[in-house]
Image 1 (cartoon, rainbow, N blue to C red):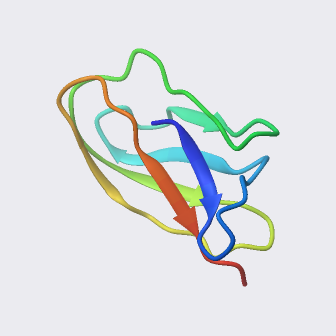
Image 2 (cartoon, one colour):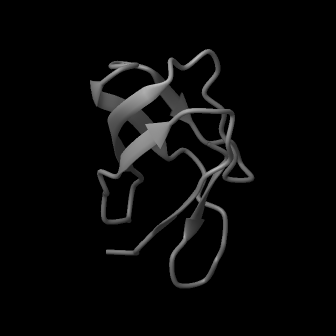
Length: 79
């Protein structure tokens, strides 16, 4: 999982919070840096639900099926 971007402008979103809320890896979390990048290391394979939130943006809760190392980019809509 690699970065968050504004769904309208494509600008990076800093200080966005990603938390695994159910499934494998529950309670794993990350916060984006100034470039909107983040990394979650040592995640177990399987299905889980994320909670993704950032100030000024509508939060989302995607379901992720993780079965190998992968990059995933998420776009958030401004409020």
